[in-house]
Length: 113
Image (cartoon, rainbow, N blue to C red; front, side):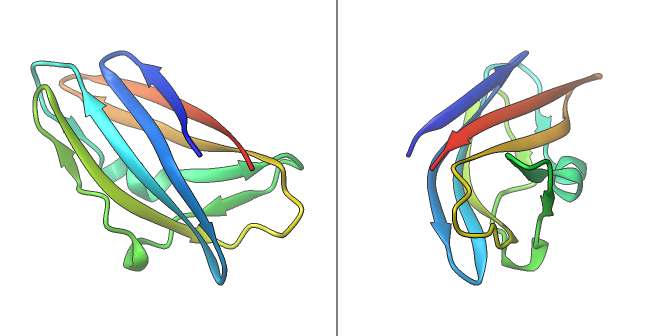
C-alpha cells in the first residue's frame, strides 16, 4: 500500500498498514524546506478518520515516528492507532498541524484498503 499527501514542503507517505489489536501505519516523511519540521505536537493530534466519520487516535507508546525532520531530510517510523474495524475500505490519516519554521501545514492522506 502506498498513499501520500503533500502540503507546503512536507510530504507524508503511508508505506504499509497493519491491522490487529491496533492499526499500525509505517510512514516516511520528507521535508523539502531549509528549516526543521516539528512533528512532536502534530503526533498528539494526528488521527485516522474512517469512511463513517469515526476518529481513531494515536497510541504514542507504540509509535516510533521521530519528533523532528531535519532540513531537506526524510524520516521513517510507525504510528499506532486504536484498531479500525474490519470491513473499512477507506480512511484518511490527518496531521492537523505540522510545523516548518513559522508555518503550519495540514496533511490528509487518503488510504484505500
